[in-house]
Each structure stands twice: as structure tokens, then as C-alpha cells.
Length: 388
Image (cartoon, rainbow, N blue to C red; front, side):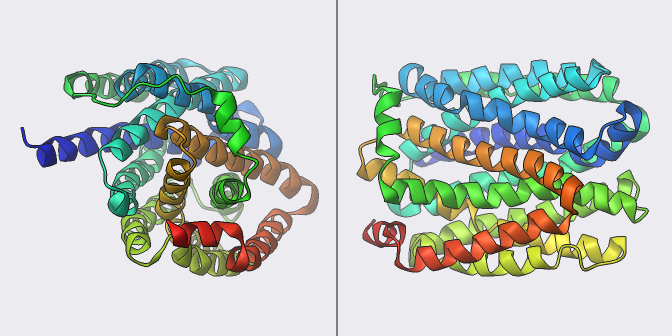
């Protein structure tokens, strides 16, 4: 098998792995109003359930990166897939809020392993000037999981979770076969995690991580407040699922385009446009008075989010290489930043929304986008990206 064919096969298998992870993460969205009714969840409790996945990823981010560095990306991806299968079965069978929280927490741990191993694997096989494009393709496939996740959630709402989720877990387990057959030529390393944490004090790397936290924060808040607000306007699980399916479709298209653009024109240029668009979209979140208009605002926000992921992840990978950080650890930093943003957005967004209304968290993040835009124009992250 030629090197090009091997790399394409690797990209395909890793993309499917993160696709499955994203799919099972996204099923909660149309199920949330129903679960809130059945289990008597407040906005805060719904936020906790949504945030349980990123909480697991947050805690497992650095250990997942260390596993990829020490045991290799293939072993790490296999570990993630096994945990995904177990947690999916548990989410289908359990009937209590704490049980479902734990199932999603374990899924987050598996996601940290799948993403750390998968990203380190494909970055090691990709030239630096193509990282944005390749990451964009992998992310586009993974985001496509968000297309099917809400649809699966809506179907589970109609048919019941147990049989559907157990069947999907069985299908996901089949991916272990091609993963075990892929060659893993990544060099193992004993680079300690403490060395990675020490590098975070450098402004360029810390700034790049913030650029990952910010859109994740928006995504987390939108995943909690969006379906609950749509439900308040009379939308059922099918309409809510369709809104998120369309959102994911546009985000899937935007991700590889933004990644390719960043390879040619620099990592921060698409991010500046994204920050302006995101601030405007968030400021409009509470303006609609019916489900259709609110759905359109949510779809537009998701499309803008698609601009961020590939350029930011490629930027983090470039900076990690410049600071001699192993790519397994670089992937862990991406997971860490994304999970932190998701937790703050979903848990904090739910709490602030309950106390002050849905507009308060969205307007706060809109202001943060504008402040970040100003800082990015003359900050060290921009200079480091240009140099890379």
C-alpha cells in the first residue's frame, strides 16, 4: 500500500472514530426537554447533564494525551472506542439523572482518548502546510456526527432509548477491526505532562487555547439554552432535532473550507471574521419571538462556529511543534480547551440563564468575542501564527 493510500485510510478511520464520538455526544440535544420533564430537571440540572461529557473529557485530556505519547495513538483510539461502547449501552439502559450523568462522563473520557490518539496520529502523517486542510476534513466528518446525533436522539424519543442505543453500540464496536489493522509508526516519548503545563505560561500558546475555549463556550450554551427555548416556543423533539441537524450540516461544510483557507492565508485571518460574526449572532439570540426565527439564528451561529475549529487546532499544532511539544500532548491541550469551554458554556450558561434570563450569557460571550478580536489584532498569537 502506498504512503498516500495509507494516509487516506488512516484519515478515514480516525474520522469515523471521532464521527461516532460526536454522534453520541449530540444525541442529548432533542432528548433534553423530554428528560427534563421525566426526571424533573431544572435548567441547571439539564446543564449538568449536558456538561457531564465535557467534564469527563476535561479530566481525561492530559492523561489521554500522555497515553497517546507513551503507548501510541492506535492504543489510545482503541481505548476511546471501548469506553464509547460501554457508555452508550449505559445511557440506553439507565433511568436516573445521576446514572445518565455518569454515562456521559465516561463517554467524555473515551472521547478524550479518541481525539488525542486520532489527532496525534493524523498530524504525524501530515505535512505542516496541509494541517489545516486535513484537520478540517477530519473535523468535517466528526461534525457530521452532529447531523445524525440529533436525528438519533429524536428517534430515541419516539422509540425508546434501550434497544436503539444498544444496537448503535454494537455497530460502533465494529470499528475496532480496521483500527487494529492500521500501522502505527508514531514515535513513542517519555515527555512529562508537567513540561506541557509549563509551556502554557507562554502567551502565544495560552492565547491559542483561549481561541479554542471561546467557540466551545458558545456551543455549550447553545446546546442547553437553544433546545429549551425552542421547546418554550412550542417546538417538539423533531423540530429541535431538525434545527441542530441543519446547524451541523453547515458547520460540516465550513470546517474544511476554513482549514484550507488557513493553510493559504494564515491561521488567524478566518478567526477574526468568525469573532465578528459570532458576536453579532449571539446578540440576536433573544430577539426572535417564535421557533422558526430562533432556529434560523441558531443555524447561523453554528455555521459561524465552523470557521473556528480547524484553524485553531492547526494553530495549536503548529505552536506545539515550535515549542517542541509532542503532538499527543498538543491534542490533549485541544481537548482540554474545548472541554473547559463546553463546561462553562453548558453549566454556566444554564445557571446564568436561570438567574438572569437567556440573553445574559449570550451577550456576555458576545462581548468576550469583541474583546478577543481586539487582542488578536496585535497579540502574540497573531505574530506567532504569521511566523509559522
